Length: 250
Image 1: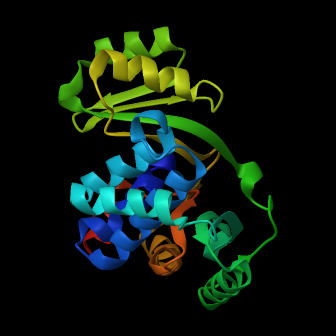
Image 2: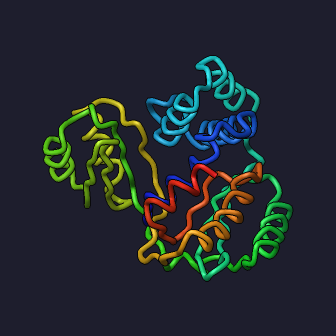
């Protein structure tokens, strides 16, 4: 479990265990609402909304619920009070953490997160206090059956991607933020709609932790992830595969 792959696992850990389905749906609906308000209410013409809809469908949200959320956002003006806020800080053992949130009360959310960091042996910092340890990237993911590794690599290189990782679980194509739209569109034109296509924070360096220290960090990450306003939590630590499996099963 390393780098961005670890971050991805952390993000989906609760869902994989079937925890707090209603809360997860609430966060997805909030992202759909904000996305629809910030651009056109048509997923085909709004990449962020398309990604939000895809995430909701992956989480087994019904199409009717999704369409209803888009309609409410476009007709009633819902979502106008939300703003995107990035919080940064250090967790236990010096781990850098980025928290992406959608909130209608920045002071409330900031206060809640500051308390969580402190309670778990960390400290919430100022904006850009840890962002220099991460890189913003565009990421497009496909299931393994979408293409062979060679076909995905060739298409990604031709589209201008920076890196491709393929294994039995699927394909992960990464690129610069500037090239993201072009890479996503080129791959979807060839292989169909991606499983995921979005911007993510990836750590440029990571810290190796043993199982006990990783458990300390995950307690904070899980607490942050449970907050209603928090959409994504990313941390820059690594733990070996065997320990990661035990932690995921805990």
